[in-house]
Length: 477
Image 1 (cartoon, rainbow, N blue to C red):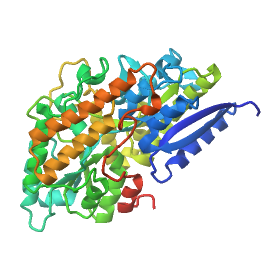
Image 2 (cartoon, one colour; image 1 turned 90 degrees about the horizontal axis):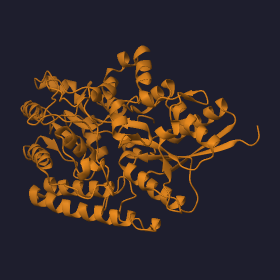
Image 3 (cartoon, helix red, strand yellow; image 1 turned 180 degrees about the horizontal axis):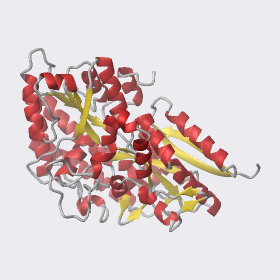
Image 4 (cartoon, helix red, strand yellow; image 1 turned 60 degrees about the vertical axis):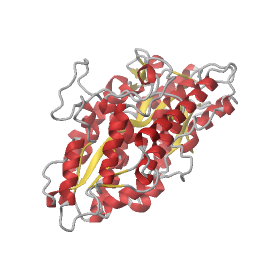
């Protein structure tokens, strides 16, 4: 067939084994089903994806769809063409009231509520969630049973008690618990306590202009974390972020508990198999001294470029919906333990017995649809905890700053109050720089400041990749 309509899709290459192969296979299958289209997927550098897209767009080079990491949503929303017009348009508005596009069922109303919450901005779903994760607690069942622990801890106080029990074990692990020094866990700790990192309702009622990394909620989290470390319960990897090191400690049974991303479920299960023990999975522990307010999510979403010809836009939207049909979304969950992003994909997995065979996988969907046991749900009109993560400029830089502050507290004994006050000052400078740049007319796009267009940016740390995890737990090798 001649005169096919080209649909270019740019995604961040996460470098998991087979990651881009699956993307290319999906494009080929869609092209087979819709032979009038030619979808081509291009993998770009994960760490600088927003920067590459922004700088290419003002040169006139732009895809039909671009996949952004969740906390880069603000950068995507601010992205422009050479004439200063917005680069992207709302997916929900482009779909309108259609129930199918080119025969592909529209699934926007079936998205997992927590992820729809996160990606909605002022009532509009700008982008399509494509990958979803949350934070979970993984435990060594045999070590906890030997320590006399019969129930996974759900609160910070329960974690303290479990750690004490593990410490009293004869021949037990060197430490009870570990997790990476990474912003995703700080976000969950703040969300559960109801704290906003930035003003204007976490940047959701308007552009954020103030950031606070020294709040009461942050101090409470930092103090609890530091005390676990001082008591000898928490194993600090000694580096930022330390994903591979904490996974290795869990595999080798040097800890009884590891907190990590739900993206790690498959890796954690394989680590337990390598270590010769059984794995249990629970929720990220919360501070039960204050009301439980919400959850934090992570992942990616796909953004639709504005100004496409109607046939190209329909093709791009059809590809989005096809990618999220029950079979494809369910397979994405199986491959990488991502949250089933739609209700239909969850139901498919459940009905075919997937969760009976892999009960540890169900929590990745269920966890964010309910409040923890013992928590009285607030009268918010929602039946589930909201997921209203921070939207602001230079999120990657702020994460780098907060993780270095925590590193100083844990590794060098820095005073938490003074250190996080300094972190707030440093993060505010990054936010101010971004806001000054983004409001320039005309805007000098290549001069985007600091780390504002980076993902997982670290000032003095080697970037980590999926290869680091594979070296510890060769799930795909």
